[in-house]
Length: 111
Image (tube, rainbow, N blue to C red; front, side, top):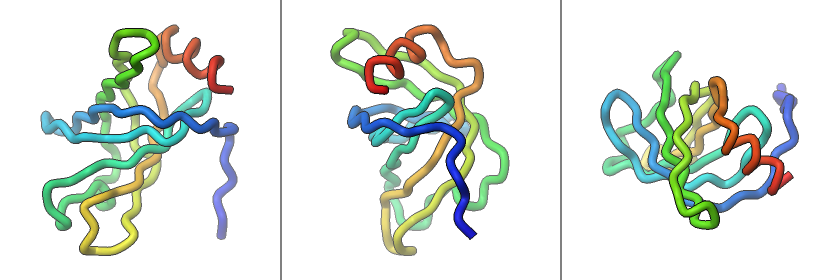
């Protein structure tokens, strides 16, 4: 069964830092929507993943060079997946919790 997206996603393509359980991960935001983002996370080991973590709050530092600053967001993991058990790259979908005005302005630009 396919899940239907609630929000239209727009291509983005900027780096980010994701912090979960006080550990920072290099990430790349592929797309954004009004209420969330789709991103890739780079793990140090293939055994690491967020697939088995049910409810986690993530801090995301979105590095957006056109603004010349980082945008800080609190997010909740909605889904995650890997292409294989040997992959160090994980795809993850996050929902923004009370997004900042800067994020809303950013989304308007890429809409």
